[in-house]
Length: 210
Image 1 (cartoon, rainbow, N blue to C red):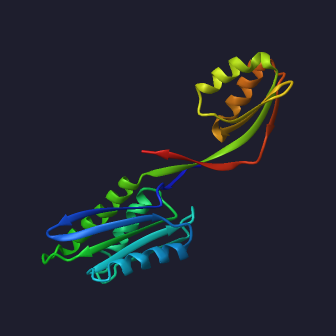
Image 2: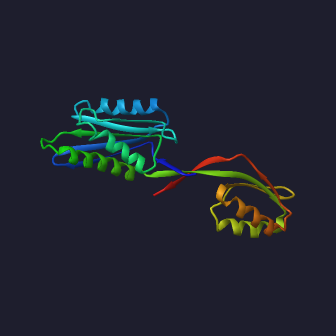
Image 3: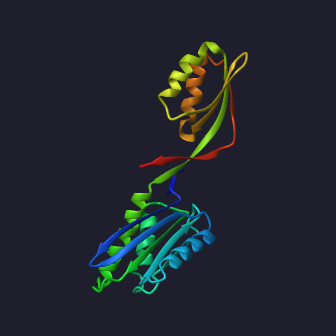
C-alpha cells in the first residue's frame, strides 16, 4: 500500500490575485498538536493579515482532519484547501493560506479557486514522498553466485542495504512486498537453491517523487 505526504519540513509559495496576496505555507505534521502549533506560528507571524485559513489531515486513515475559513465566507477557504490534500492523497500535512486583502472582492467562486489553487501550488513546490512497505531480507550465499546475483538486483528496485563477507557472502536487502515472489524465484534459480533466505517483519521506507 502506498500513501503520499509532504517531503520537506515546510514550504511556502506566494500568488497575487486581483491585488490580494495569498501566501501559502505547508508542513509535515505528524500529530494534531503539531498541526495546531504550525497554524498558530503562521498566525503569529502574520497577525496583520486579513485571513489565515487552514486545513490539515492527520494519520494515514485520515481519522483527524479539519478546515478553518478564518473569517472568509463559509466553505470558500478551508474546505477547498482540505480537498486538495484529499485529492493528492496526503496525510500528516498542514496547509495555511495567508491572505492580505487587496481591495477587490473575488466572490465565492473566486475564493474557492484562489485557495485551492494556492494549496495546490504549495504541494507542487514542496514535493512528496511515497511510503512503501518492504520486507527486509538477509540472504547468505556462496561467492560463486554473487556476481550474477548483484547483476540481477541492479536491474530491479531491490535495495542492497549492507554486505558482509566471511566464508560466505551475506546481503541485507529491502524488497517490496509485490516483488517478493519474483525475488524468491530468481534467488533459487541463481544460486541453484543453495542460498539461505531469512525474511524479517515488514517495515515502511520512504521514496521521493517529483
